[in-house]
Amino acid sequence: QVQLVESGGGLVQAGGSLRLSCAVSGGIFSTDTMGWFRQAPGKEREFVGYIRWNTGNTYYPDSVKGRFTISRDNGKNTVYLQMSSLKSEDTAIYYCACKRSMISGATNPQNYDYWGQGTQVTVSS
Image 1 (spheres, one colour):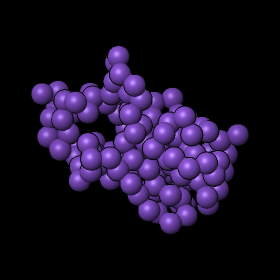
Image 2 (cartoon, helix red, strand yellow; image 1 turned 60 degrees about the vertical axis):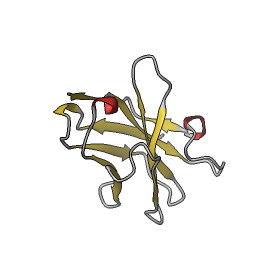
Image 3 (cartoon, helix red, strand yellow; image 1 turned 180 degrees about the vertical axis):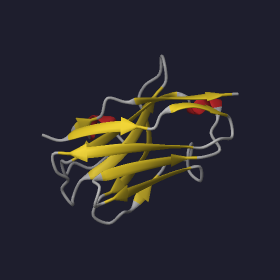
Image 4 (tube, one colour; image 1 turned 45 degrees about the horizontal axis):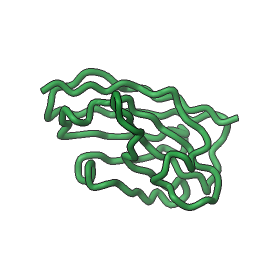
């Protein structure tokens, strides 16, 4: 059973940076895709980016492109979300997720198989 544990959330001023971590236990397959999502109060879960575990290829939506970077540490089975130039609208609970199935659509949260518990990020203006 795959378990994901996020950490690193907190309160940061607008314009600041924060790095989230997602520790994965239970094994990672080379074909897994690790995604980051966020959910603000009253809003739907939003795609933030993903990384292909085997290639390291990443993809981001326009809302965070150039500000957020996803990376992985194979030896530690950990995925990171480095966030910079943070804005108040980035305030949300951030989740990491693992997509194991070969179904296409890595930007759709419904296609992910395992989820962490989330970590709160609050950006003060």
